[in-house]
Length: 241
Length: 241
DNA sequence: CGCTAAATTGAGTAATCTCAAATCACGTGG
DNA sequence: CCACGTGATTTGAGATTACTCAATTTAGCG
Image (tube, rainbow over all chains, first blue to last red; front, top):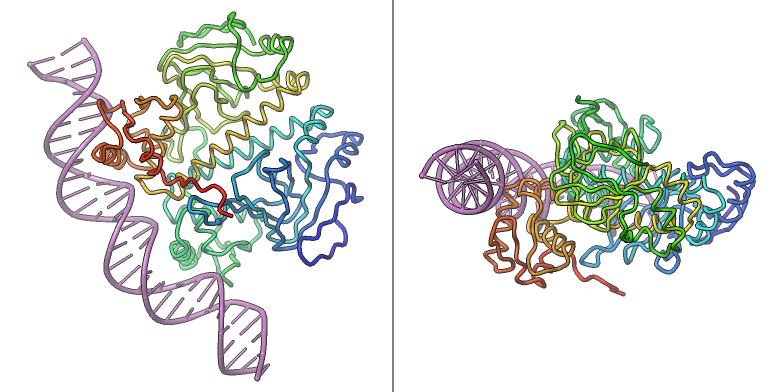
């Protein structure tokens, strides 16, 4: 994307930045359609820590994370703000329409976001049926993803939850040998429904078991990927006919 | 999308049964569009306990529960079948596309289901933009619903989970004074991530606290709705500016 | 009236949380 | 470059919660 310096939350709009937009939402579109899409969407870049100035209540929108990562915080029953979800490159940013009260998006690293007002998207989708199909595919993926969390939160032990989250980050970051935890222990706990102490103990246990290395608290080397995956408790349970 | 006879499962197909199809998915459609819709969807009825003979893996479809209720079972990591979700009248039946391996739908009571193959729906949605908009609204609602479960499973105590589930059934069944639990204690436990014993103890505790009455194990009288709601732990947390 | 499955209850155990203290990581100023 | 301060992380110990296993009671049904 291009140069863009900003103190806090400056944000540049560039309807078409010269490079191809690449995202599953645009799969299979013709060049003409892509051109149309580029007019309807706007691209924004955020530096690490920048809030995304959007109020989905006021104006529903569709967001695509082109690269980087975002965190979504919600306000819980007691009014506390807590980490609710993370979105990585290639993902759809939250669903659409009004989000939970008090939701807030923040860039975790340098992030490029492609957004489009909900109304505008409806128009585009009518013109480009393929766009609609792609959106449904993405939403489906999102729901499957949510089900994974439901399993995690409902039926897993602390060690399985932590292994699952690490494996998830690992996969999201391309399966490299080393991954970076974009959130601290307390936030890992909020995501997994555990306390920060329990998260810490489980991570250390994985380190002591030589499943992971921990050169720094936020850096994790995956030493034994197979073991990590098996510790998630997600059996290979395919076909049990 | 027509005639199809099934071995087991009493189920009648009636492309158009004379009565108006009423569902949020069809809100705002013209009569002409409704006619088109009626051709694309098929209506099926199931008696209590009937399985819904669908393999979403083989043929993705969209399902609307017109009345009655369905349960969805999935196969967990150990290959065990367990209750995953319930769908009541007016709801969208699972999302779309491939479901988890081993998923199975079963009618909990006399149920009318309106279904449409995924491909057919895409065609319809192109013709009728409003249909697509409505679907997105429904999906959004579904995701919000899933988030509610995520909160329940991740951050609630046993008593809050049980209160939440009862309050949820209560709301789903129209908020009458008495509600019927369509599932047993073990299944309530599977939904809420608790054991059947814990569910039982919590329900009895609510009874002893005179929040609910329990004339029969599957019948619950809501004696103190306000108390029940407060016990869910979902604070009224609006605006805390 | 049995029979069977569901539900309840009890007692002991295991896992996780809470609270508190110690250690570590890292940026700042000397 | 190093001491210092702050916040994150780790560790420990005891309290709680929910689970497990077992026994008992209840509900539904022929």
